[in-house]
Length: 329
Image (tube, rainbow, N blue to C red; front, side, top):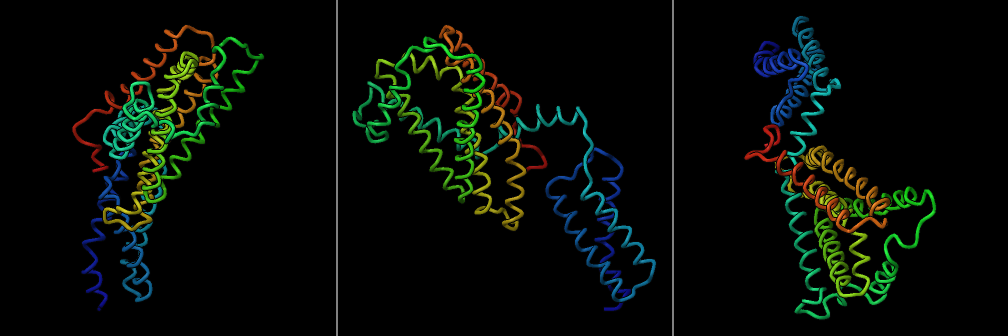
């Protein structure tokens, strides 16, 4: 192909890339939509290849200079760093993240599986169950005995040394985070591992709750778990959803290369995992300071209610919309 023919055949793509650079350079806040970002990267790579060919075939110096400038501008826009602005972070935290969570299909699946399994297992392990040996199927006698022994003493009755609450909060952060990380990591096994881990946790925890409604230690148990339960259990669901998103992105690539699909899913999972971390931390604070305290049960129940309403407000009220974010469609 002659030089003139090569330039003619590539001119349209160079103009497209140049126009995209102009739009990005004209505004600090302008962002490309997902499909346009992919097109921009494709045009950029093609321009790099054209520049190499232009140098090799010694095309007109003006063409080489133009391609040098075009590739440099595109590179700067592709890898530019956004400036920190409070208004952008506020928009991200209180509009975009809740909206992503509200439309997150993996979060809906994890929520339905976890709470469906939890409530069903709790009912089947309670005194009203039609399956009288259900909890014995899920839990061993040693596990049930250890659970009962853990709540054999009255909550807040045995006292605790000064600084013990902070130490227990650290223990609970480590313990709760381990559960979340296991749910997240299992999701990486093509998503199927996350489904099994979520189902296992929902049934096991539901059976434990149901069993404790049938023993004399029931009051102590619910005195302890009520206040921090909403944050802790919701954080487990969020961790499971984030892991499943990553795992299934390897299977269902939506036309992307597997590695690109995984990177996209990782970016979308970051807000979910960050919210899970915040909830694990809040649950640990409550579990370390309020749950083992002699505070009235009504107060602990009020904390649980406020926690639940806060979660619903953030995800449902702030995130409610008929369509997901435009750049994620």
